[in-house]
Length: 427
Image 1: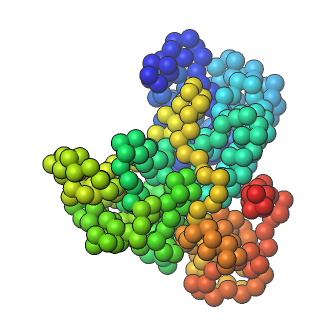
Image 2 (image 1 turned 135 degrees about the horizontal axis):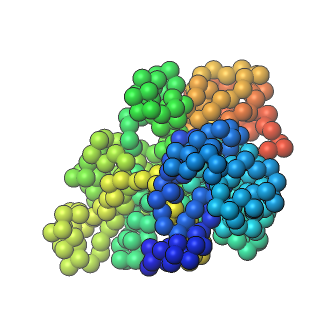
């Protein structure tokens, strides 16, 4: 059992040592959770804001003397041997440390996730990303590089895609036919949401307004379901998906096949539902061919007989991630990896009229949002993958609601994420 294996590592004084990028809301939460997991240790926290990284460690109960700022490998290794924790602004330093078993990125930034994963793979380290945005943007390239280097690449559980993969495996193992996989959206969809429109709700939840707006405008959901699509082969029914209102009582009827009165045109669709009843959960609607099993599932209240929906009512963000990391290190098991060919992608859509010289801001901001479609449709429009949008400079005007293309922007060609994406598109 995984828990027993971790307890043995703890008893032997040989924890799985992890280096993580990000000391913001996700990264500090990951640090807090890691402090409670036996047999694992967050040894290095990487962030441009060293004080934030230090604060994240100290919030777990460490004294200031337990946290060492390091810019050299030797100093960092000496400190880890002495039981100290390392803060640094250099992900490459973390990747070079012999004491580190695995790297992760606990940010929503594709650029940060790409830097972290590339540094890990380049120095022979496994990588388990909490960052689904990076996987959607350059995951296939990272998977290939990791395979070539003989190391492991995976996305963790905790966010909806990883949780969905576990549920998909469950129904596949039982021989049920997945019709629709999806999530319950946590808040009503408003594609026009900006930090201004969500300011009050973000403040009440103690969340960043950009982050909150990225949930409300749908960008986060588009990333999540694209990540799941690229790992399972399931496709959206339409651009942006459908996103009907649903409850646990109605979702099975809604997502049965069209021939049986539902919305699904064929088996293997990805979508999401709105409404409080399923918010925060993940689901898989399946078709059951065996009459006896169909009757039993109906009795067990998970469906109407021919169709059933398996629903997990929660996902635990970075709190679950240590489980995926431990399985990767100890058992060489991945939680989620993209297929070898793209299934879906996320377009960049203008949130307002944009002019040459405008700089695109961040997810949930004022200038763009993400919208999911098939990879074929995105490529046909030369659509700019939304993971590359932050920081891009407009060189042509694009009207509100229109697709922003590769030709409409100037990108930082020196950035790791842009380089990896261009390599990925040549695969």
